[in-house]
Image 1 (tube, helix red, strand yellow):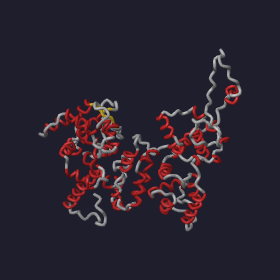
Image 2 (cartoon, rainbow, N blue to C red):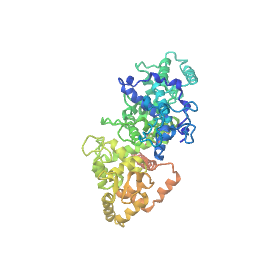
Image 3 (cartoon, one colour):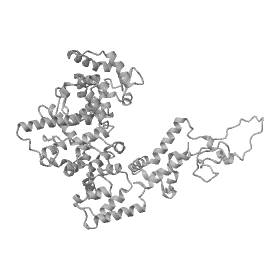
Image 4 (cartoon, rainbow, N blue to C red):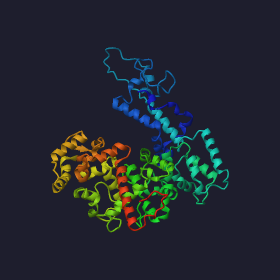
Length: 560
């Protein structure tokens, strides 16, 4: 394999390595340093390409320490890899005794033919693969620069010049409300992070950030050449943590509520501002609705600890940048739409009959006009798909409901497929069998008979499911099989959502038309739009009957 596939080896500047100064004993007092440096090394593009090339060679069966490469460079089977050593030389040998050294063994004469002495094979020379040598160089350079390579001199000078322009008329420093431009133009971050950035630099809570303090933060944190995701991760995370929790996002949501033009109408309705940020009136300290959605989609490990890798793989940063550019918050469909929040909250409020901010099985069975079966509701409350945030037995909290409704109304996403797969997988062995699917479909069949619908036998349903999913094995379906098919959501609707099953069987033309008109919208986007229109009309009807249709300023789009 051509070593160029793993990157340009010239990026390993030997002047930056300082190999003689490295010692493993220096890391013993602070093992956390080694972990941090190793994590930094893993994030390098060169590392990714190197590991991929080694894996490809292993899959191809190429020997990792091929002895053929140790033959004289003049031989036909010599090493074909470009060498990092002078022309005609070989990689350095591992230390050996003089008796085992190839240099000395060449001087010994071979026994004559016919000698009774047994020939002892010459010890093979051990060669350090050139890729490992390059790998060692990358590691060493990262150990030398804990926070990564410093920015080029020209970039630093250009940045400092721009910083001087911002602080030219503010010799004493900038206050928090003056920090947005420098957050966006110098740090290249969405303005949602201006308050969090200000507090990060103003460690003494003086209410002012000076030029020197700002420059120190940029240089010490190596912020000039860091990618946006890493900047945000380091900005929000708590000290000594390598993940983000829901609490870490609260300053961002507070900044959104306080400054975004699309939410100005909420300033006259503090109770709805509280609900949007999900600090409920009854004192329940739950995380914000927006944050629940972020963790539902981005935290793929579903452990409440969002890692840098997950942040980079998600689309959260793009959505935050869109919030910066868009005055209408409802056009930012990912995570931040107020309309989406309103639909989620009202659907929960409709089910929560006693408004204690908790719902039970009898409440949830009413969802979607009794669309779901009792058996699937039982599985949800057994906490098979996810552990409830509610600490009250048999009760689902608002956060749990957010995960439920996002999974129920868009079964095309990976989090949704994982949610419902865990529900159907009764024995938790990682596969869905015919018996498990039939257990849930039996209730669907009974409901069809009660409604006078022509029942569809499970044998026919099973064949239909196999045709839709095309699993690797016909007798079972894995989560991987479901993720490979675009029709997986229909499988779950067949098993436990009668309304959507009938709609699928009838090939609802209105739904097909909606998908064709705007294929960029997700199932969740279309559902939220329909429900918001319905709720808005109901709200308008109530206002008209109460003589209060003019309550909201016409200059704002109706929030309800």
